[in-house]
Each structure stands twice: as C-alpha cells, then as structure tokens.
Image 1 (cartoon, rainbow, N blue to C red):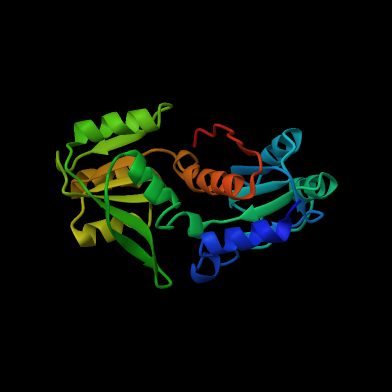
Image 2 (image 1 turned 60 degrees about the vertical axis):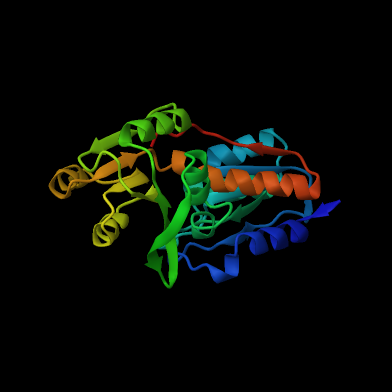
Length: 251
C-alpha cells in the first residue's frame, strides 16, 4: 500500500516546496489529509467543489491542485467553503497544493513545459519574487506568424493576440497565469513579446504605445501543465493510476 506520507514527501522534494517562496497565504504542500493510504492520483488546476466531486466519482484519493484552498485573507468555513472541506473529509480525499513551485520549476513548471511544447529553448529567467525568478525567457528563431501557428496547436480552443511588436523577436518572455507583473519587467529587459495567461484591458493600449506582442492564452489553460506532469510522475514512480480532471475553464 502506498502511503500519503510517501506521496507528500515526493511532492515536497520534487517541487522544491521549501526553497520556493509564494504569495502570503498561499500555503503549498498537503492542505487536507485523508486516512493515510493512496490508491489513485488526480490533478486539477483549482481546488473547487466540482473538481473535488469529479475526483471522488473517479475514485481519486490524492488530488494535486495549482490553486489551493488557502489564500489571503482567510475565510470562514461556511457555504461553499464548508461544502468543499466536508466533501473531502467524507470521501477520504487528500488535497495537495503547489502554486509558484509549479510555475517556475526548471523541469516540470508551467513556464518550462509551455516553452517545450512550443519548441522554444529556455535561455534565462526573470521577474524576481523574494529572490526567486518566476518567469522564463526563451531564445527565438521563428517569426510571429509561425509562433501563432504553434500556439494554435497548443491552445485549440483559442487565444488572444495583440501584435504591435517586432515580426521576429530575438527573445520571448513566458509567464503562465496572470501576466500583469511581467509587462514592466520585459520593457526594462528590452523584450517586446510575452506569452501569458491573462492581462487587463489597459494592456491593449500599452501594447500599441510600447510596441509589444502579447499573447493571452488563458489563465487556466496555461496552468494545466505542471500539476498534470507531477501527477504523471507520481503515477509512474508509485505504480498508481492517474487522471487529470479538466473542467475546460475558458478564462
């Protein structure tokens, strides 16, 4: 029998949990335990009631999520928050969260896997948070038209592009999820192209004024990679079945 402790130890080590800072209140690691035995691994982007219910339907008892149960400020365990905890406890479902550790990981991070899937080679990192860079910079030899073709293949449900920068950028910045914090940084680095999940409306004007190429591929869609890869690794290492729970969130 594979134990919860074994899985948690592997996840903590593999994700560099203790070496990677995160936003205040974003607790990484085991957020809710079960009876201590694991029979099936699952992964989802969000710690929501729907993925929890789907996990139970699919006999998953260890669920990895990117956006965990706990953030700032803390919230009372009432209404849907209570329903989520109640469901997990009643159905013996353990929840493990990994946020920034699965964004910037050099092998199984969202940024790195996204770059690999686009056949772009990692060159550097950027955007320091408490001494750890959370964004990725890749070398580029293709034009914007070819980049759009590759993104079409990776995100078939669509993405938005604001194309006001160079037609063949030397470097491309990647920051999965929210890319708002990356704009000022790429400008200071002389990079005019960013692949991210989402931005704000005012970035449309900024892209024109600063001559930027901005690709908005979806917060959810760009953060499916890390949890999925970690789940598959655990499945292989511990010889357990694995399933990714995709809610097909369009945002």
